[in-house]
Amino acid sequence: MQYKNKGSISGFLPVLALLTLSVANPGYAAVTPGEYSAQALGLESMVGVKVTIDKDGVIKNIVVDASEETPELGGVGGPEVGKAIVEQQSLSVDAYTGATMTSNAVLEAVEDALKQSGADVNAYKK
Image 1 (cartoon, rainbow, N blue to C red):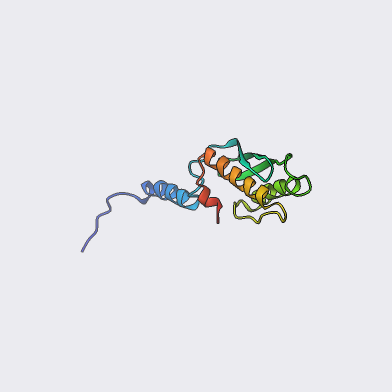
Image 2: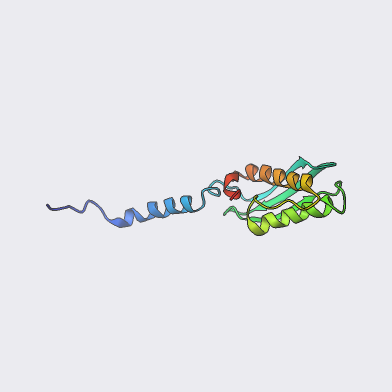
C-alpha cells in the first residue's frame, strides 16, 4: 500500500502550537490585563482589593484595604492573605489566624476581580 503526501507538516505546526498554548494555560486565555477593583464584606466592614493581572494571567500585585477591620487582626491579616495569593498564584491559601472573615472577604473580592479580567477563576483554585 502506498501513501501520498497530501501536504506538509509545516502547516500543521502553528495549529499545534496554538492548541498547546490554550491547553497549557486554560484559565488565562481570555484575560484582559489591567487593574481590577472589588469589595466583599469582612467582619466589620467592606474589604477592598485592587488586583493587577498581566496578559498571561499572572497576578502581579494585590493591594488590600482592610482599614476598617480590627487593626491587629483583619487589618494585618487581609494584606497577608493578598500577599499569599500573589506568591502562590492561587486562591487556595490559608486564612489568617484570628481574621477568618477578613481573609474570606479578601478571597471573595480577588475572585470577583479575576472574573472581571475574564480569567477562569477555577484555574486559580488548585
